[in-house]
Image (cartoon, rainbow, N blue to C red; front, side, top):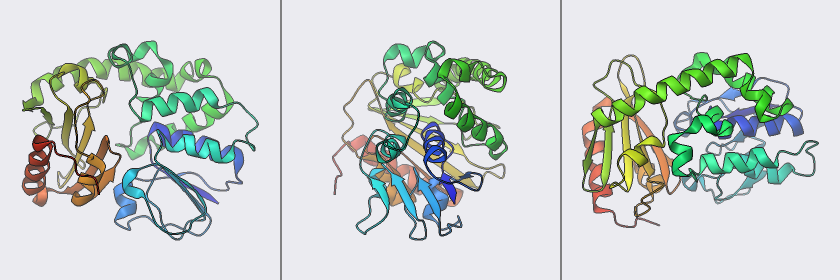
Length: 298
């Protein structure tokens, strides 16, 4: 039996809970949602998929993304919720030997971006938020670190987790990156009407940093679009969209919107990945829809 999930904080917590409750015999398979959607991931009988689109070959499935809704019987649990980990926690609550309620409460808050201005501007004061910022799916070489965090949060309280030598070093890197990221956001973001557009494609390396920071830097915007290359060959582009968590006037369901552009996600946060040849067409259409800011529910 194998866990298949995505390398973000929600996926890490899902994996920790599943290790606690199921007889997992193999390492976690870390994958991106777009790769599952495009059939690029081998799913096997016995696999448990969490925080990713459904695949008919899996034995259990847990998810919470609007665009991953299915209308067929399956084993597991799905509902629109703050986090996939919360759904796993609810499903297995009677089997869990430890109290993970605080971890789930924090995961819900982080994955749904239900944060205060102080939490956004000073994540170093909030250990769960800082820990979540050390988990990024951009570099497959980080797989050992993701697995390490899964193991740590199963065995220790948050104070001990962030004091782990490896985690502490990652947290220092996050703090440093966040300072640089603020300057880059200011330099590479333009605001069109109420849409903040951050385009990092001209940079040799895509910077990493606090994904919530744009909402505080551009308070007049209701939604942020971030565009970056996803590979060294600069052939694949990732475009992500997030509703502002402070100026809550975006009417577009961005998960539904990006399902039209090889992606998907939640009503308030979503991403898509596509070939560079489609960039001009896709980006223009996406931004036009966001500027119109009209409801697009089914």
